[in-house]
Image 1 (spheres, helix red, strand yellow):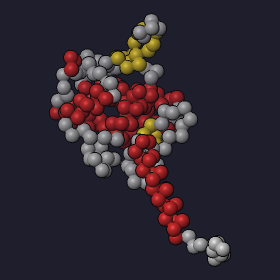
Image 2 (tube, rainbow, N blue to C red; image 1 turned 60 degrees about the vertical axis):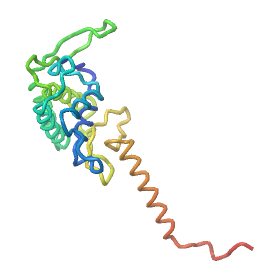
Image 3 (cartoon, one colour; image 1 turned 180 degrees about the vertical axis):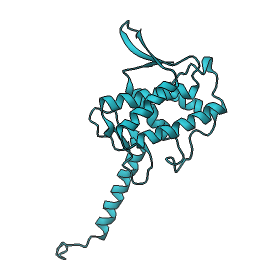
Amino acid sequence: MKIIFSDYSFGAGVATDLVNTSAAVRLSTGEVLTGPGALERFLHEHEVRLDALPRGRPPTGTDLAQTLALRRETRALLEAGHEDAVAEGANGLVARASAGLSLLRDPAGNWEWHMTTGPRASAAEELGALVGIGLLGVLRTLGHTRFRHCASPVCEGMFIDTSKAGRRRYCMPGLCGNRQNVANYRARHQEGERRPDRGGGRGPR
């Protein structure tokens, strides 16, 4: 598998979405990766093509089990309190796939750095290398503070903020952000109903 070394945002996005497939995060819908078929859909939706799954071979139960272990490991790295621990763990993910650095041309003929996984790397190891490069790129370029817990008080999700402004607050903005906006609106509405009328008691004439 060839991973563009400079495109850390892609790996960081996959890492974010992977950790948020857990039932501990998806309280209303439950576990996302319920079987090998669900893992296949996850990879397809994220346009992740693994050399360990050639010619469209579907993931196996072993691939799923190893990916769930990778998810737990990735979550632990996002929660790590010290950036050195993140670097060590992410370096380990890359090394596990026997990834080496290569200089290759892009479709336009320009040179770009790639990490190429080893020929014996498993599907989860290749996915781990992609995640690891994403974490390392963000850590080096944007800093450890970009690894965050979701700001929603009812969500256990985490995310890596790769936005330019660095102001992202929710693991799934379209879901958690909207829920929080609704909750804030309801709280303001209820507060308004409880607030006594201070208009002086003068009605219309």
